Length: 173
Image (tube, rainbow, N blue to C red; front, side):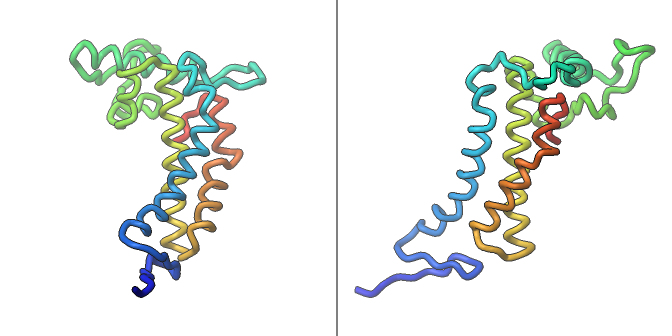
């Protein structure tokens, strides 16, 4: 019985049978997901908690995004997609508003959960996808090892500019 060695990619090899390469390649993604779960655990375990700055200076979530998402969710529940928002000054178009993102798929989270939990899920998913896509970018562009790409992706998704924007109420997009 001989030893089976398969080529996995970018100079890495695995011993063993079928599926070993797939499990090894999912490990960095699982690691990035674990980091995101640890970072957002207090908010995921307590859906009524809102990501809020410790400075108590306030958050753009309440002042900007909350009303927009509430109005959009209510309109969709009533059976229509709003084109004009008449609650702000003399009104404004909804379709091009950056704070509403009515056609963005993750906005649907607001229709199926509480606004605080939807905001947490939105931000957690953005941070996770920032890490995952950075991982694939580093692997493809620089042809690095999985470990190097995982470290780079972790550094990107946890960079202070991205994480500090969350507490200020700026969605991580």
